Image 1 (cartoon, rainbow, N blue to C red):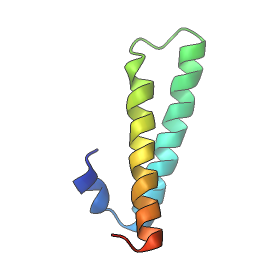
Image 2 (tube, one colour):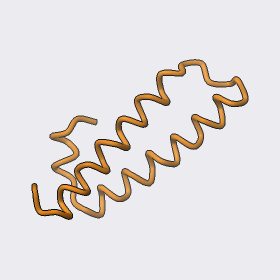
Image 3 (cartoon, rainbow, N blue to C red):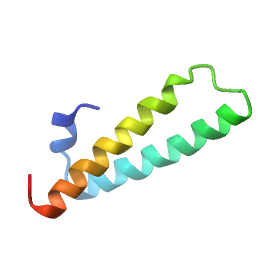
Image 4 (cartoon, rainbow, N blue to C red):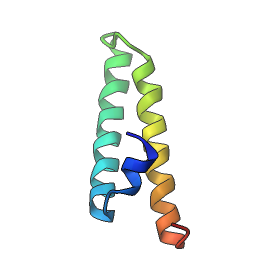
Length: 65
């Protein structure tokens, strides 16, 4: 998900996307620890997605965007 797509989301959708991403990260970490994860780069991709979502959320709280 690109930044322009994230900016187009409403606050409720942004929170929902963040919750889904955190749930997905939990599942990926679980699969990684049980050696069932094939592509370990997925963890990094989801972590970056969470960081983007949190940054946009914080910018909106501060009124920067």
